[in-house]
Length: 334
Image (tube, rainbow, N blue to C red; front, side):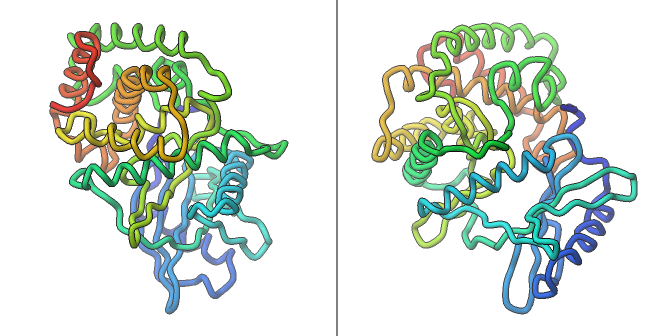
């Protein structure tokens, strides 16, 4: 897998692809196209006279068609349990994954989804809202443990090697913007402790399985007291407790982070059980995720998300590593 993460197409070029792809669907889905965001993929809002839809165009080198079909299979299974998640729409050819060749000769895959209503929470969200997130994550995990995956199922593997080493899916943390060379030893020492903790924790089926892997605020929608989950593009095999670490991605250093974690745990335990080992591994999961996102900012430096973090975000990451090494407290907050 390439770690040259950000798509090389311009917004104009990727929008033109969306226009072409929309023609591969029945005419009732034709409408106004607006680019919403770009990261591992480009997401568009399609507005017709009566309805709204979301189109996702995948960049090259991250998922093949079978990977995407595997994601859609899990979404279908989750919906059968009553969880509100995106629902794909078939094209004129009956396929749920459409394929197109861009002007640069690369193959792009795309999926059109029914729109899900809701408001995306921000870092100002009431910490108690994380109880809903914890509860719905527990439901996801319950379904994951029980689900009999189809034979073709194939998704990303999220472990120590694929998150925070030179073999990471998202590149090297050493390449993060504004990260000082002098601070590398602090991160390296933190990772040594994380590796030991995760090795001891293990990958038993009750601890490691199919997870969302990016269940953070920007992938949630709040609607009439209900929490809805979107963007399963990173779902794969990983530690279940990684979904807690992902829930506070980019925001671990903020004052509310401690309360977010506590409320997430409270909500989770209303549905599922956490062992003491699960609780004890949380600090290692959180600091591993923060370092993973350092790598992400290096390979996604041109994204709006990375540019919004500011120059101090790398310094805050190092501060949290020091807290992880020096105290028994969660590596969160000020």
